[in-house]
Image (cartoon, rainbow, N blue to C red):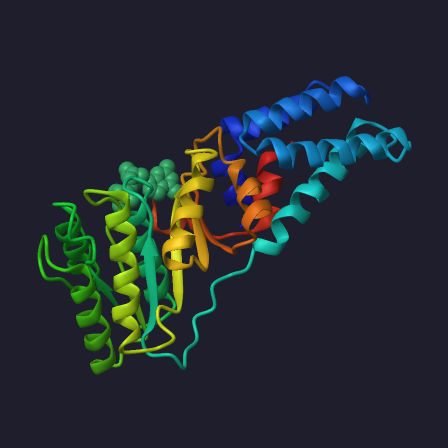
Amino acid sequence: NKAAWRERLGGTALARSIGSVFSRNPRLDDDLLDEIETALITADVGVTATTQLVESLRKRMKAREFADAQGLLTALRADLIAMLKPVAVPLEIDAGTQPFVLLTVGVNGVGKTTTIGKLAHRFKSEGRTLMLAAGDTFRAAAVAQLQAWGERNGVAVIAQGQNADAASVAYDAVQAAKARGIQVLIADTAGRLHTQQGLMAELGKIKRVIQKLDADAPHEVLLVIDGTTGQNALNQLRQFKAAVGVTGLVVTKLDGTAKGGVVFALAREFGIPIRFAGIGERPEDLRVFDAEAFVDALLP
Ligand code: GDP
């Protein structure tokens, strides 16, 4: 598992920015801390989180807790892992809840459709029965894309065509999944409408309508975030959280990015579980988020 993370993330700019500091065999001094600070900020860890990390290292360096730069690196590794551990909480699918309704939300282009396909692949290979709801009725290709994916993989997709009422699609899907005894329902939603307010209102409506059939649904509201968008990801989370109450995150495209450091900023500011990470385009590249594997892939 760790090897796969390293293979996908090891060559990224994010890993290079942090890793290169130590590859030059640095001396244990304030210059080293400055370089670490620059690397972390460049990687979009965020100013607050970076300052906190660097000042804590500085204090311990002055107290002569580290024998050398390598000792400081070991401490940095532990600090980075400690920041992420609280949010590395895997998604638990309650087998007694049928269907377990997973509402996926996120702006266009973040990898939402790809993630739904990867999730479906994962759940199927775990032996679960599942169904998809084509709730992005705004984007022309979204319904067709999901239907094509469902056909290829033998997964039923509930759809009503473009411009249908997304809440009605979701309602139909929950009802169908109940009737057929399906274990997991993954509902897609629009990533863009005419207005941002319109989108948030639609998501709220979908949630309310689903709750008419199951008061506890959706059992997971999964926000898909593009790991390359940097600090913008924080704004997206803020907005979706206010509109529908996000319970879990998927951070995509961590392979090939300089900005994946936003994972630390997200963890620090919100404490919302990061369920999965996208580290490539293949189905198996959606990984359960692993704090140690992630940090180790970034460090030399
Ligand atoms: P949507 O608009 O949010 O549904 O986005 P898509 O699912 O269509 O994905 C947009 C692009 O991002 C596609 O080219 C995907 O292949 C790509 N993508 C999604 N997840 C990942 C990932 O984890 N790594 C990489 N490298 N590409 C990804």
